Amino acid sequence: MIHHQVLVVGGGLAGLRAAIEAHDMGADVAVVSMVYPMRSHSGAAQGGINAPLANHPSGRDDNPEKHGYDTAKGSDFLGDQDAIMIMTTEAAARIYELEHWGCPFSRYEDGRIAQRPFGGADFPRTCYAADRTGHYILHTLYEQAVKRRIEMYNEHMVQSLAVNDGRCYGFVALNIATGELVPFQGSAVIFGTGGVGRIYGHSTNAIINSGTGIGICYQAGVNVEDMEFIQYHPTSLWGTNILITEGARGEGGYLVNNKGERFMEKYAPKAMELAPRDIVARAIQTEIDEGRGFENEYVNLELMHLGKEKVLEALPGIHDLALNFAGVDATKEPIPIQPGQHYTMGGIESNVDGETSIEGVYAAGECACVSVHGGNRLGGNSLLDTIVFGKRAGEKAAKDVAGTRASESAAAAVEKAMTSVQRKLKAIEDKRGKEKHGILREELRQNMFDRVGIFRDKAPMQEGLAKVKELQERYRDCALNSDTKRFNIDLYRYLELGAMLDLAEVIALGALTREESRGSHYRRDFPDRDDANWLKHTIAAWTPQGPKLSFKLVNVSKWQPVERKY
Ligand SMILES: Cc1cc2nc3c(=O)[nH]c(=O)nc-3n(C[C@H](O)[C@H](O)[C@H](O)COP(=O)(O)OP(=O)(O)OC[C@H]3O[C@@H](n4cnc5c(N)ncnc54)[C@H](O)[C@@H]3O)c2cc1C
Figure 1: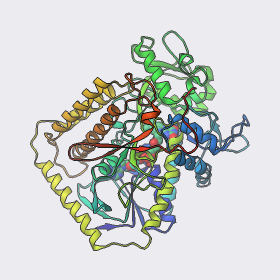
Figure 2: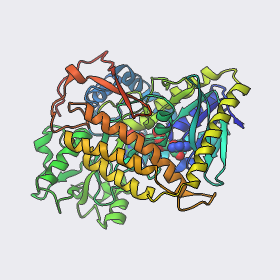
Figure 3: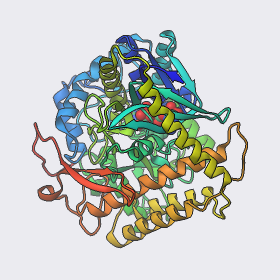
């Protein structure tokens, strides 16, 4: 049995930052990741990372308080304000740390880190490395982890937590390369497993973002929070839904309908294209639904007026993506875009130190709900969330495990989990069903996008929830096509789908229950925000009959909610 005091699940930004911190605090730590760390979705992040450095040449002052207020307002006041202030107060230190570790941020001529405007922010505070920010930060953190000789178990998919009497002792992972089950024992398990984007059709997310980390925790009895809040990014490439960063609008890009109008004038006269994502995504979808889109499916993003030099310098990745995936030269022609699922605001219920409802389980990054993003995340705040709360979770876990070592009782709990996963896999191997999990997955994604999507309504959501339950039934009747041990994609896609269906149920039920509109959760039948009844977080706990919902008050310690105007 493998033993490390701290086991970090996930090799993205949150996982690596947590591992580095736990290591530096003296813990014996390892990273266990489904993919090689550099292939984590963090590497796809484009536009940038927020911090109130006040470097922008406009000379305007910026500070954690202003960043905090923009974040709370952007969250439609569902974000916990104590947690938000921790994030914005620690932001600058985390950015300078990355700089000192060698992250090649874009800079002004005087050498300071450059900052661009982003949606919902009253100040240009998004630091960036061209339009490949996530790629550069991920490399920086990976180098730091390698330098510290932190052990990594790559291509290991965590399956099941070993929980006994309300405490976690480790987990069982499937070695994808060999097909073997591997038992891991540890006193702290930190999840940095990313979002559930792939539950939805039209997603900007990597195929690995199936949310199994959140699913495993939920199925083991850890609470999940605010899962109904799913972010739709306004600008994904028409057809493929590859992300076109908000940085494109930050650099001055326009959104234009088939009448040639910059339609954001009607929806957010002041902020225009740089209103928060929920507002811009709904505006675009409304233009398309009311016949002012192109081919009833997209509107145009224009960068031509910025000039070739600026596009190639500030947005080289976007220029390449548009050229390679839409055949469009963005310096000469508009880019066809449509909204796409983008981010999971909810996740594993965690506090500002990553602790969850089960002792020994911690979470940080997109899989966690701290909650700093509330009903709607501002662009550039997620990368920040991963490094601020990743560090804090690593620090807390290391303190909690000081002096612990492998124990027989912990090993027994992991052995028990091992036996149960072995049994489960054997049953899957022996199954002779008629359903195909690939087909169920596509039906699920279509169902969620169509019925629990950008615009929501009671009747379609009820149908959507019923469809998820139908899919859960049919899932029991799935058989595998391949019994190979090595890289059995058939098997792990099947395993992912089980967690995805359970989380889809939580999302649909939460969305049906929340009878108001807030942030990304927009109900046509309840179009207003209802602070009197719904200024609260949705908590879901797993039961054999389905999710059990309860509610938790929002921390409103600094700013009273006001109507959002942009
Ligand atoms: C295209 C795109 C562009 C973005 N651009 C920006 C941006 O410019 N600014 C910004 O702030 N945010 C951006 N975001 C959001 C941001 O990138 C993510 O929220 C953030 O990087 C998530 O980091 P993470 O470490 O939490 O998870 P991830 O980077 O998703 O990493 C998850 C890790 O968990 C592992 N894992 C998952 N399940 C298991 C399992 N069962 N067992 C073992 N390992 C597992 C995976 O192998 C992976 O290593 C963007 C997102 C996308 C999709």
